[in-house]
Image (cartoon, rainbow, N blue to C red; front, side, top):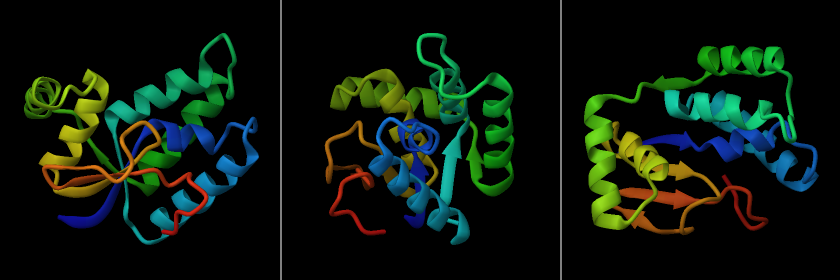
Amino acid sequence: MSGRVLLDTNVLVYLYDPVDTAKQDRAIEIVNKLVRSARAVISTQVLGEFFAATTRSRRPILRPAEAIASIRNYLAVCEVLDVTRLITLEALRGVETYSFGFWDAQLWATARLNQISEIYSEDFNVGAVIEGVRFTNPLLEDFHI
């Protein structure tokens, strides 16, 4: 597997969410380092989730135009992976085998089938390795990239 890192939606959302400034600062630092080193990877799933999470009507973080501009920026500076039929099938296996929720399974399947050895997210069991994919919470205080 490579040194590329698949970013989960929550890491990108923290870039814009001022509610927790410590997590926001860490997310900015981490994403900037990954982008500069050409290791940042996102999926089309993450882009869609990002738009929905940042523009939702209950507590919008960004206006739709701002979210669109951010997504265009990610398309320009990150490797972007499409969610394919094979990824969907592998995600279903992840649901059956590991009891992942479907969207988490799809993220795991995207990493595994694209030979990405690490997912940065705060939603998984930190430190777990499932079929060669490690789950890391980069927002923890003791994390160092």
